[in-house]
Image (cartoon, rainbow, N blue to C red; front, top):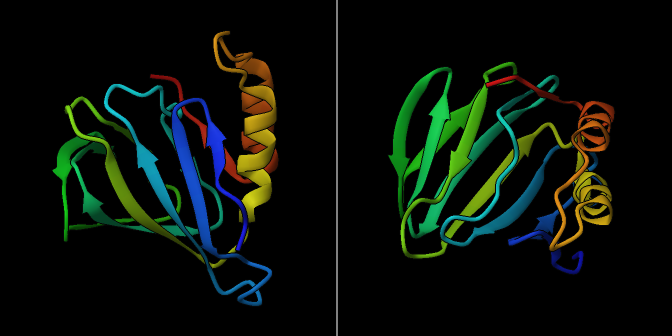
Length: 141
Protein backbone atom coordinates (compact mmCIF):
# COMPACT_ATOMS: atom_id res chain seq x y z
CA UNK A 1 0.00 0.00 0.00
CA UNK A 2 1.19 3.49 -0.90
CA UNK A 3 1.29 6.30 1.65
CA UNK A 4 -1.55 8.83 1.27
CA UNK A 5 -0.90 11.35 -1.49
CA UNK A 6 -2.02 14.94 -0.95
CA UNK A 7 -2.71 17.20 -3.90
CA UNK A 8 -3.82 20.53 -2.51
CA UNK A 9 -6.83 19.65 -0.32
CA UNK A 10 -7.44 16.27 -1.97
CA UNK A 11 -6.14 13.05 -0.44
CA UNK A 12 -5.67 9.79 -2.34
CA UNK A 13 -5.05 6.43 -0.59
CA UNK A 14 -4.21 3.56 -2.92
CA UNK A 15 -5.64 0.20 -1.88
CA UNK A 16 -4.45 -1.73 -4.96
CA UNK A 17 -2.05 -0.63 -7.68
CA UNK A 18 -1.44 -1.72 -11.24
CA UNK A 19 1.81 -3.29 -10.04
CA UNK A 20 0.05 -5.36 -7.36
CA UNK A 21 -2.73 -6.52 -9.72
CA UNK A 22 -0.67 -7.27 -12.81
CA UNK A 23 -2.27 -4.32 -14.57
CA UNK A 24 -5.83 -5.52 -13.91
CA UNK A 25 -6.85 -2.43 -11.94
CA UNK A 26 -5.95 0.52 -9.76
CA UNK A 27 -8.12 1.10 -6.66
CA UNK A 28 -7.97 4.13 -4.40
CA UNK A 29 -9.98 6.10 -1.89
CA UNK A 30 -10.36 9.79 -2.71
CA UNK A 31 -11.25 12.37 -0.06
CA UNK A 32 -12.62 15.70 -1.28
CA UNK A 33 -13.24 18.40 1.36
CA UNK A 34 -15.98 20.98 0.87
CA UNK A 35 -15.15 23.51 -1.85
CA UNK A 36 -11.77 21.87 -2.57
CA UNK A 37 -9.98 22.73 -5.80
CA UNK A 38 -10.41 19.74 -8.11
CA UNK A 39 -9.02 18.59 -11.48
CA UNK A 40 -10.21 20.26 -14.66
CA UNK A 41 -12.77 18.47 -16.84
CA UNK A 42 -10.99 15.62 -18.62
CA UNK A 43 -11.35 12.16 -20.07
CA UNK A 44 -9.31 8.99 -19.79
CA UNK A 45 -7.81 7.77 -23.03
CA UNK A 46 -7.31 4.10 -22.15
CA UNK A 47 -9.31 3.05 -19.08
CA UNK A 48 -12.76 3.06 -17.50
CA UNK A 49 -13.46 4.35 -13.98
CA UNK A 50 -16.09 3.17 -11.54
CA UNK A 51 -16.75 5.37 -8.51
CA UNK A 52 -18.56 4.20 -5.36
CA UNK A 53 -19.73 6.74 -2.76
CA UNK A 54 -18.62 6.08 0.83
CA UNK A 55 -19.64 9.31 2.59
CA UNK A 56 -20.64 12.84 1.71
CA UNK A 57 -21.87 13.86 -1.73
CA UNK A 58 -20.00 14.80 -4.88
CA UNK A 59 -21.51 16.69 -7.78
CA UNK A 60 -20.47 15.08 -11.07
CA UNK A 61 -20.70 16.31 -14.61
CA UNK A 62 -20.48 13.38 -17.03
CA UNK A 63 -20.81 14.00 -20.76
CA UNK A 64 -22.60 17.28 -20.05
CA UNK A 65 -25.12 15.89 -17.53
CA UNK A 66 -24.91 16.86 -13.85
CA UNK A 67 -25.80 14.50 -11.01
CA UNK A 68 -25.20 14.09 -7.30
CA UNK A 69 -23.54 10.92 -6.02
CA UNK A 70 -23.66 9.92 -2.36
CA UNK A 71 -23.07 6.92 -0.10
CA UNK A 72 -23.84 3.58 -1.70
CA UNK A 73 -24.23 5.05 -5.20
CA UNK A 74 -22.05 4.17 -8.17
CA UNK A 75 -21.03 6.07 -11.26
CA UNK A 76 -19.47 4.39 -14.30
CA UNK A 77 -17.21 6.61 -16.41
CA UNK A 78 -16.35 4.91 -19.68
CA UNK A 79 -13.06 5.73 -21.35
CA UNK A 80 -13.40 8.83 -23.49
CA UNK A 81 -16.28 10.29 -21.43
CA UNK A 82 -15.61 13.88 -20.37
CA UNK A 83 -16.15 14.25 -16.64
CA UNK A 84 -15.57 16.54 -13.69
CA UNK A 85 -16.46 16.54 -10.01
CA UNK A 86 -16.83 19.06 -7.20
CA UNK A 87 -17.91 19.13 -3.59
CA UNK A 88 -20.12 22.19 -3.01
CA UNK A 89 -21.52 20.56 0.15
CA UNK A 90 -20.49 21.09 3.79
CA UNK A 91 -19.27 17.53 4.45
CA UNK A 92 -16.05 15.98 3.15
CA UNK A 93 -16.86 13.41 0.48
CA UNK A 94 -15.11 10.03 0.30
CA UNK A 95 -15.32 7.73 -2.71
CA UNK A 96 -13.74 4.48 -3.80
CA UNK A 97 -12.44 4.69 -7.35
CA UNK A 98 -11.53 1.68 -9.50
CA UNK A 99 -9.70 2.13 -12.80
CA UNK A 100 -9.78 -0.76 -15.27
CA UNK A 101 -7.40 -1.76 -16.58
CA UNK A 102 -4.79 -0.51 -14.13
CA UNK A 103 -2.59 1.85 -16.12
CA UNK A 104 -2.06 4.87 -13.86
CA UNK A 105 -0.88 3.78 -10.42
CA UNK A 106 0.28 6.28 -7.79
CA UNK A 107 2.90 7.85 -10.10
CA UNK A 108 0.44 10.23 -11.75
CA UNK A 109 -0.86 11.55 -8.42
CA UNK A 110 2.64 11.78 -6.92
CA UNK A 111 3.84 13.77 -9.91
CA UNK A 112 0.88 16.16 -9.66
CA UNK A 113 1.51 16.55 -5.92
CA UNK A 114 5.10 17.59 -6.65
CA UNK A 115 4.02 20.46 -8.93
CA UNK A 116 0.90 21.66 -7.11
CA UNK A 117 2.19 23.64 -4.15
CA UNK A 118 -0.31 24.77 -1.48
CA UNK A 119 -0.71 28.52 -1.38
CA UNK A 120 0.23 29.19 -4.99
CA UNK A 121 -1.72 28.63 -8.20
CA UNK A 122 -0.67 25.59 -10.25
CA UNK A 123 1.02 26.10 -13.60
CA UNK A 124 -1.70 24.97 -16.07
CA UNK A 125 0.88 24.03 -18.73
CA UNK A 126 2.76 21.74 -16.34
CA UNK A 127 -0.46 20.16 -15.05
CA UNK A 128 -1.61 19.55 -18.64
CA UNK A 129 1.74 17.98 -19.53
CA UNK A 130 1.55 15.57 -16.58
CA UNK A 131 -2.07 14.68 -17.34
CA UNK A 132 -1.35 13.95 -21.00
CA UNK A 133 1.73 11.87 -20.20
CA UNK A 134 -0.40 9.65 -17.93
CA UNK A 135 -3.38 9.26 -20.32
CA UNK A 136 -5.71 11.95 -18.97
CA UNK A 137 -6.83 14.50 -21.54
CA UNK A 138 -7.91 17.92 -20.21
CA UNK A 139 -10.92 19.46 -21.97
CA UNK A 140 -11.57 23.22 -22.06
CA UNK A 141 -14.71 24.35 -20.20
